[in-house]
Image (tube, rainbow, N blue to C red):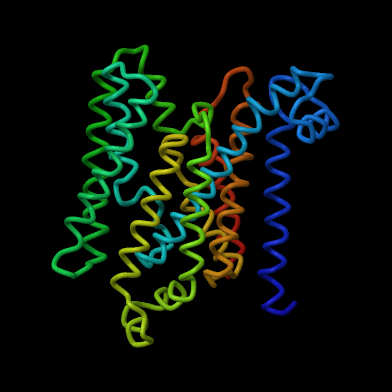
Amino acid sequence: MTSARYPLLLLILFSLLALGSLFTGLLFGSVDIPVSGIIQALLSHVDRNDSIVHQIIWQLRLPRVLAAFACGGLLALAGSLLQVLLRNPLADPYILGVSGGAAVGALLAMLLGWGLMLINVASLAGALTAIAIVFGLSYRAGDWNLYRLLLTGVVLSAGCTALTTLILTLAPASDVKGMLFWLMGDISRAEESLSAWTTLILVASVSLLFSGSLNVLSLGQMKAKTLGVAVLPLQVGIYFCASLATVAALMLAGAIGFVGLIVPHAIRLLGINDFRWLLPLSILLGGSFLTLADTLARTLWAPQQLPVGVLTALLGVPTLLVLLSRKR
């Protein structure tokens, strides 16, 4: 098989996987609905014959699977961008402290007894504060130091972890479970995913537009400069695009780990390094992976729902180990 056909074949397979994961999310739940009932509900916006099935599909399951897919796609996209920015295949969307800042804001709002809207506002404020701190300490007088960027993010993450631990210690026992679900990721609290999908399409479009420059940057800063790439503006753009995607995912479902790490790494282990293919493949695989994990999280121990972040780690670790073991 030629090198040109291989990524196209993967794109087709991952597109089918994405459709299959979305339909699987619609099929499984606390109420058994046949395939014909799901198709009929999807094709008819107003189902007069079975309003209960129609409401379950359109008001409960479809918004949730769409939110899970968007969140997974955002995390995988952010991970792909940060891995080329830091030139480190182990980089993930939370390595620069964005998740830690959002967690401090969200948990502090929960501790104060604020409502869902104010919790989201506090989470957004914490994430934006972390982004501003990391960028402000890493970008000075036109100089962008990636080592200082990484070190600042790691130190900030450690400080935010200490603050979240303090908040969990001070919180009443009745609030701790909700805080833990936020820290481990919870798709069930996602009310609408329009803003997440908008962010995903926007960031993906901009990233694909500069995919050629990303390919050159992956060879190293010196080679990229020699080949005429404006490295500094490109790096700043990558940082803010990845941060925007991470914030959108955090606002939608909390801190869901491992997706942004394993998905781009798995695509590279399959032999795809061209960002023209790597980015869309990562989005499709990340969305499918999180959708299937969320479906399993809400059906494995029904009616009890498990934190989806636990499932992503339990499913992701053996998958990555298998891929690594097969790579020469």
